[in-house]
Length: 575
Image 1 (cartoon, rainbow, N blue to C red):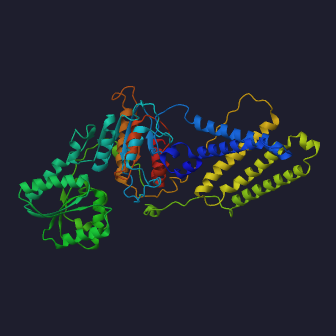
Image 2: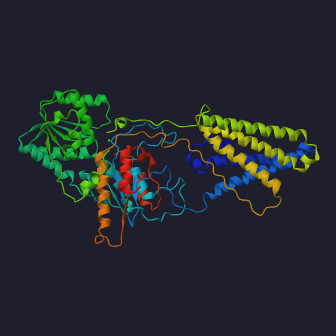
Image 3: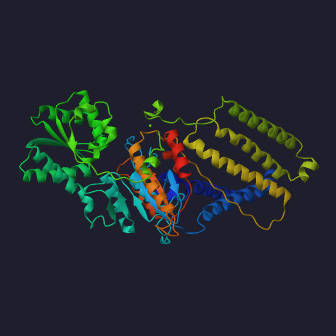
């Protein structure tokens, strides 16, 4: 049985069954079976000592493992599986609102082999954040057989900025009938109520923008144009509507190429070659502001000037795009913008955030793994104390062994005394496993070995001092975190515009709470997650719906923010 468990140690069934306690239970059962052999044959001094002591210890280990495996599942609950995704901004109220914004403008790509558990992401992604808002942030547990009847943790979710993540979130939380209200997702495909019945937005659909861009091109008499689009739902759907409208208006497209900010350099070079070889001087750019930032950098290196750019609303009025180096290639660009609205007090509220002049945070910085080394003062002292305790215990053991025939040693229950000294020696030596660079086996050993030896010590002390006891109950929790999410976290680029969106949401909620006439006797709260604006957004939506409350901020994403931003979060939200 142990061999079967070990061969399938990475399978979900074994991992969900608490593999560490399972192996310890199988080991103790093996010892229990072997202990029966000590009662066979002619008794000797050592066999007599062993038959009473060994069976008692192994039986205590078995009972402890069984208690540890059963107490964990005392009450069936609906719980989320996987690592927690906690919001960096939160405030509790009578009505909770969720928020998902793309605080990070870049992330590190990884190729997963699907043979091991994926490493923690370097920022919280949209669907994961949405599931976290729907589900709550309970500890990892296998799914319960009891149906989940908990109410949604939030009543509505504000976000996402991009269309593709919004489509994924709306698909996931749609069955829960939780509204997703986006402020910037403009894809016309999101207007399909049969697919996205709970999706709402405060910005017009690209159906109108694409047709208006075609009318704008027709107005200036440009009939021979080129087109570049973002290779996602926003760009592909928007450009498809523009192409159809342009064809009806007699406008011809010389080329139409797709682009995404993570494309390899050879594909970007092909796009540049297409632009250089074209005869049209008007370029329709249906791009997101993040893709446009990358494209501007590449075009400026090739000095592609003299083109008339017609842009979509995502980048045409973006202030960060206008401040980039190489923005001169966009001189004379025109496009459609979103009408501005004046909200009293919002400007002052947003201006409280003054991050991004930190020259040390303009690149990804991988945090170093911290561990206690033998060369450090604390490590040397711990090693010395461990060896000193081991030597002292060994000396006492030697004295007991040499005087084991004396009445005082025999009257002192020599078997338990030797076992107690042995377990104390192991306890002192276990501290050495916490020194040095951690590995998979040392991490498992440091938690397991100390727990076993400590149980042996306590069992011996109880056996020596108490003959009768009414109740014995123990609980062993063996846990080994093979990797910390903070250890793999990288400090990524901070998106000030997305943070302002979140600040605007917080400001609106605070204004409603301050006005007793708007929602009498009701206080609004919020839970806001940051993400990379990609498709891996499932766990965040269900965390907003689950209804499990846990006052823990997302340290991973929170710690990756500049220190000035974190200070403003504390001052503005009371975290």
